[in-house]
Image (cartoon, rainbow, N blue to C red; front, top):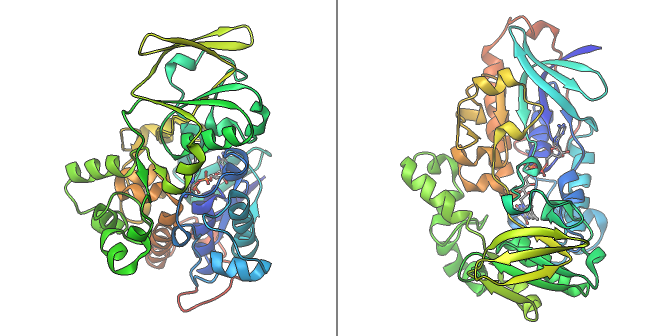
Length: 416
Ligand SMILES: Cc1cc2nc3c(=O)[nH]c(=O)nc-3n(C[C@H](O)[C@H](O)[C@H](O)COP(=O)(O)OP(=O)(O)OC[C@H]3O[C@@H](n4cnc5c(N)ncnc54)[C@H](O)[C@@H]3O)c2cc1C
């Protein structure tokens, strides 16, 4: 079966849902594929809370009417802060039901391009023809597994994204590798479910943010130091919050600030929960060997220990080749740097009509794109560029076959 539409959105996380909400509201004929909030549902630990502040944890619709505040009103309950993971997933599902009712729970297995446009193949055998593809496929495929652990089976060593329920390690000895929020929060959750947990952190010290919350929340001071999404160190945060400004900075400064903003750290509210957890800093794991039901790890200080499980909270490194559904021919035509696509206006890549949102856009639009907070900017930019190109492109072969449709979404001043 073959069908046509103007654009396909791949992904139904914060970025996919937000861009789809904007395109729906503008009457662009789109199809949206993915499982709603699946990465948050399946690849983050139960009991986790969002690290991003309230204002920076909103999905984006043109009317700004589907906010976390509106969600609270809709469910008749006040959400605690930091926002619990389960509540954020429910918020995403609520947003989807209102702004993206046309979401199809289908997996995209292949994206190619020929002279007629893009060809998007779905797992159910359907092939969709479209003029544009917007990839919002998330960071799941980019999980970093250090080479010391690659030969170990999943029961002995797993990436943090592979553990949904940490209570399965009750009574077990677990080593958590890494010093970022994910590592620190996993260690706290493991400790709270009676695991014997130790953290091994390469850096000499744990970096904390939000140690003095008033520096972020007391307006006269907080507004000078940090912009609303609160991504990146003091002052730098203001440039990060303005992707169009960030793009104008010299490349060396963009790179330096991108690294600084992504440096592993933990949010201050986690600190008391780690009081009784052993945190070994300035240490690395040299080797790891399976010994029956356990792993023997050798540390850089020459000591050995046996543990039941190694949890690698070792982050994510963008590498477009890991989006398996992008065909070889598409990948070979893409201009990339350090695994990121190089994007122009409207998040469009060097392959005309192919857009990337979320973490892959961070090289071009800055570290804001690694967080939910970047979804508003990205969704507006993509929608604007598609609508303005559409206005100037009348009479191209595929255009006659396309019938714009409009999905009813709450309207506001900027709606439709
Ligand atoms: C432990 C952890 C905690 C985090 N906490 C925060 C936080 O508090 N605040 C914050 O701003 N950010 C946080 N992040 C970062 C967060 O992951 C991103 O901000 C966010 O997920 C980006 O959204 P996205 O839409 O790009 O991707 P995702 O949310 O990962 O969504 C990807 C979507 O793509 C779909 N998909 C993938 N492959 C296919 C395919 N082949 N076909 C169809 N659909 C497909 C999936 O079903 C899914 O719907 C956290 C990350 C981790 C790992």
